Amino acid sequence: MVEIQLGPISPTLLEPIAVKVSVLNGKIIDVNLKADYVYRKIEDLARGRNVFSLLPLVERVCGICSFAHITPYCQAVEHICSFEISEYAKLTRVILAELERIQSHLLYLFEVATHIRERYSYSIKILKIREEILKLLEKIGGKRIHSGMNIIGGVRCNINTKMKRIIREKLDIITPKIKKLWEIEHNLSKKEGIGVLSREMAKSIAVGPTARASGVDFDVRRDMPYAAYDKLDLDVKVRTEGDVKARACLHLEETLESINLIRRALDFLPNFNEKFVLPRIVSGEAKSYVEAPRGKNEYYVRLNESGNIEKLEIKTPTYHNINIMRDILLGQNIEDLEIILVSIDPCLSCACRVFSGSK
Amino acid sequence: MRKKKWGIRLLHINVGSCNGCDVEVLSLAIFGYEFVDDSPDVIVICGSVNNQTKPVLKQLLDRNRRVPKVAVGTCAISARVFNCENVEPVDDFTDVDMYVFGCPPSPIEIRNGIEKVVRGSYTWLKFS
Image (cartoon, rainbow over all chains, first blue to last red; front, top):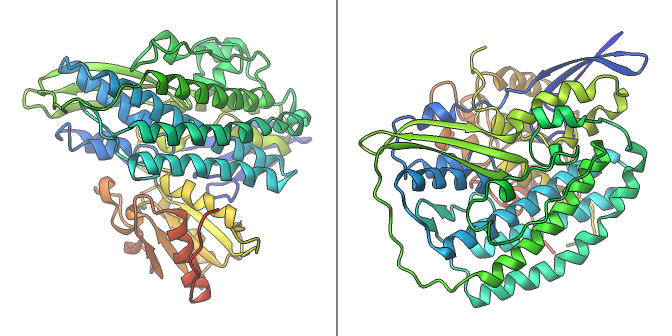
């Protein structure tokens, strides 16, 4: 038996994670995971602060899916204050969230493609498409990441007729490029049947695309609709194989579905002409869900009488998904360790705000 | 974009950032940067140091003593929104040759900072 450690800092991984595996005859027989390196005390820092001054901190829980964190926080506070946001704000939230989902899924495909190590140019192609989406986000909100477009009571960007045209043109350019990425299905054909997650386990633990690749037909956007998702009929993609290839292909399908959603939302989007009103903050508590790029994201907010945060609780998708890691790694070949690791799309900076910081 | 491969070997250390700077550093792969874990040309540090990553960073810096260090992002410079006890900026911990400011800085800015440290000068590039 040999013990192999990957990480915590490794050129193939974006985030610090230490995986210690025991190997016997080339098969993994034991897994030890340490994933709490990027602990940042966010829930402690939030306590006692004003709801509006907390917006930059909540946005910086994650740099890949920052919009999926600010949206449930705003929704929860709006629900406490019984404040209804405008139609324009609802549809804009959908557009921005879907643009973010596209860039996050493309980043996932890039990570999977680099671990196949067959064609370098293929993975760079994915990064270049992602760069175009980020440029579009910069054009809309003025910043590539952490743009601060979502605030309590609405959104802060103006998508007018000209901007609508720019978004449509950009989507027309990238759609054929993304469709060409289907060759990943051929590149991954060697990895068929690797890292299989059973349907029972997916149903009880996993969320998001990881669960949907194992046949669980659940999507927060369709089953617990928020913002304007109830208007736009969403086609939830489901696969039944549950292996590495199914997860990668599902991400690609969802990317194309997100483009369709943005097009539909742009058709409904009214012109920006209403006056912006801030809600009056009252005490109370609320829970809010969104479908982040990695799955169900859950926020719980409790406000005290003076309108400050008494408790902020964040339950991110990786918090659920990291628990399946051990089960899908056991019994696999050691050379597939890295691709299985990235195939569930772990986002540790989301997940690790709640682990204990003492050592 | 120019076709020339720059070929800078880069050791990227995430010491507790929100992934924002890390994905922007990752975009440098478009310029032909290599991500390695031994004998790098430059060390790129993202995020503010916390209790868990302190020993990891110390070990990696001891291994690469003479390599120039670039601190990327506001968290690495001042810990910004995560400023509290046990979370400290990178330059409390080690000497840094170049700071790249921004939350997060764009890949162009990061590239310019790295080029300035490694080659002594830089030429302005644009994404194609």
